[in-house]
Length: 618
Ligand code: F6R
Image (cartoon, rainbow, N blue to C red; front, side, top):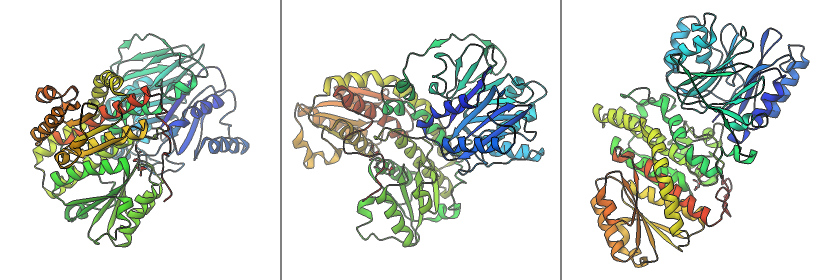
């Protein structure tokens, strides 16, 4: 998740902008840049690595005799921290990006979904690109529409862009104007006295002002030293009240949430949208052309093996169900720490998928290396560009969840599940095992997941809090699920034990009668993942068995499933989707339940005892 800061006013702005970026560092980034209008030209400096590198590059740039990026009277500028999604981590790919005349500079967060077609169109018109990014399209698009009015050019460009983004543009000929636009990705204006700010998050300008105006989805903002005007893309001016931010800096870093974990739970719609948006350009096909495996391999591979640890393993399990159902390819899987030591049978015709959000987990890396040495093709699914997994694999599919600070994986998990769905659908498409109509429906369903995640969190949050309140002193929780509900149950149980230290167990519900049912009595809450699936009836019998032994049943169900609510003590509903997509929603109440139970017990949910975010040693 990249960071944006913009300033227009009467103060020299280099330091203000870089100080703003420093406040966004917690979001993670791999390169950064700043552009200001100084002495009749746009002066831009970018650097790979941290902000110390950017500061050093600015210093060097100034001492080289060029117009100093910092030199007064530069009083307007934009700055950016980049977390690479499209294009490698290089100086050329860092923002800001200019147009062909170098009069327009933009910074952008998020993803422009139709970047490939726009790039081609613009290149055919003679535009010359200097980066591999989707973001650069926007500066050239504004250039194409610019006829002396930057606001109009941004408005017209906005109408042509599809995706999930927020950007800020400035033009050399308008040295007191920033124009910003928001589609899904956050954008906030900071109001000063004779100066104004814009940022992707409040910490970007909190040291300077606490007065803010929230920019809503689909709005255009013009920012001058004197004022801020928010309008619709059609030009209708909108009234917007000013708000006063009361958070301290620590809370601001957490987006106003009490913990990083809570913030990251709320970032899940965004994380999934970033992961799927440009890979689902329409309804007929999944675009995974970035995968350096080739369609032929995906069409012909006759066995897939998934290796991963912890939460990533659970994402892999959901992937297994999806791939087997949609593409009819046999999938085996193992926790990486077992796989690597059990002398596994690996064939050079296998595709081995290593799932690791950090890209640095020692066991997963070792399992991937073993597979590669045996001649198999290895695909890494990871969240971190440049991580070891990306170097050890033949191909990489990136999740785009942004930096996750809370030790318990939340937004990286749903992004991994989304990536596995993309892969399953692409395999089904290429192998002809999904009929075109079925593929269309599933793609439409997957595209609706980010808004359904948002809806789910909003509707279940208070209920999860209340249920946690009534159960936080329990000594043991048992989770059950069947089919695609099973990995959700496993993940829910892992979340609760790792952040609350309450023992949990998770079972395939059909296994209950083979032993675990002995654990049940009135003191045991049982969490049943009972969303729609062809085995729901069987799941309900398992729930009845538990109820009969006095256990309190907390069920996760698909909205409208009264039959589940009838047999459960408490039911948390998630929106209806294709049943295979339900796990990505069903896990949300379980994350919140674990969160509130740990919170009620006064625990540090961001940093549970004995756990590290990345497990790099054996
Ligand atoms: C649990 C959690 C861990 C990780 C596991 C693998 O919330 O975060 O179980 O999923 O340590 O980590 P990665 O995905 O980085 O390989």
